[in-house]
Image (tube, rainbow, N blue to C red; front, top):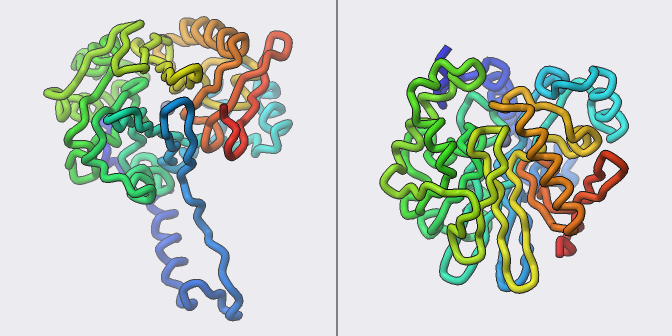
Length: 329
Ligand SMILES: [Zn+2]
């Protein structure tokens, strides 16, 4: 099956229709049926902070429902995965991952890290909120000067364009590591057992921005204070980006770890969509050790919103310590 951005999942369609029905249920806006004030159902979806001279915001693209975690979290027993979910007060049968997109203002540049799903129906009705949240903080998406991609998976790349194929960031230079550029633009990978179905749509996104694409190399300072750190295994060119300003730094880790509880307790866990799971485990072990030893603040794309915090060593494992409202640094 070819999976295009327009592929619709039946469950998602049903939930979409259901929420439309609830919205049109006939009560006065802001009031419940009894006339009492109605509390908002939705959360703001953005979080502002700063470090050094940089102003920043994490913008949610909305959550990704992953279903049964034992189908995608591999290499550990079912009991280990489910018990870790339960110990974290989470549903052991259903895993949900957030999507935390970072926007920074550094000098004259406005830099976005990853782009979300672009509202592709494939992911159901919850994701696809990035553009709405960019507007919510008063930023014109045409003013974004750079889009830095940690890798070219659909939930990070497809938000380059909308459902109508129009570019979301028409003036931005797009940065992607050379190994991912090579992998995701090679038609031979349409036969890839894990990712083949997504390949044509990923290639189309990259073709759309081809003229403004900067192919990144490991260790390259792609923008003043923003340095690429190849972290391969999830994809061939999966890359973390270190952002330095004065004495402060933030490490954007992309999909180094998908779930905040399971991957920290078991750093050797394998994710079902890793192109090279063994290489990714090696990458994760080495970066986790560095992050903990250097007490670095990280932004994890799929951790609970806004995904900012630290990793503390705990024997052979780690603990995720989320930052509070204004104390990431
Ligand atoms: Zn992802």
